[in-house]
Image 1 (tube, rainbow, N blue to C red):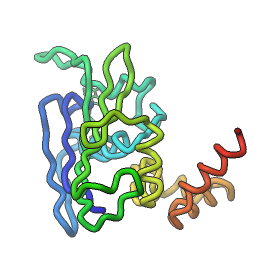
Image 2: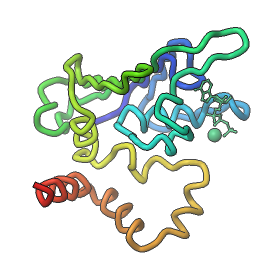
Image 3: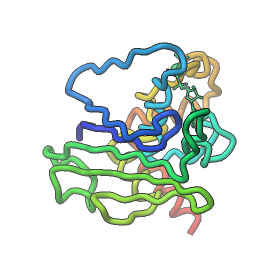
Length: 183
Ligand code: ATP
Ligand code: MG
């Protein structure tokens, strides 16, 4: 599974439709302070099911919607699409019939978030499990926030264990066990 494109509309500072191509190898994003580099990484985490507003540097989840600027009115929704090359057919069962997967998350003011995979409505959990089974996702240790390295160094053993479990690709199983225990 390879991430090939990230599309944003009305997400934080990306008010106009933006299409970021992710080529194989290293992609660098450069720009002055405040131009939106961190917002791009947050968009990636958000479309994979991030549900903690704080992790998006907001007070509530609707804070990801473009809030307006002196010359532009605020938007009513934000949408992020992640396009994945699945020609290796490594996506988890249930999502594995097509060469390309498009995961879309849209948040509308006063309505909340809705997710689609290849135009089909799915639940947040389906998207979270899709990525957890592929050893990635909103909490993947591969996505390093500004300031996260020092947090990692000071982490308590329990949260460090979570990080290791995600790196080992077993967090999907862990979540299923937790849900089974609740039943
Ligand atoms: P640095 O180099 O300092 O880390 P950066 O390129 O990572 O900067 P970001 O933190 O991604 O920059 O972007 C911050 C910008 O995004 C700020 O200008 C902020 O006003 C804008 N922004 C954040 N949320 C919204 C929103 N909901 N609506 C409009 N603009 C927003
Ligand atoms: Mg930044």
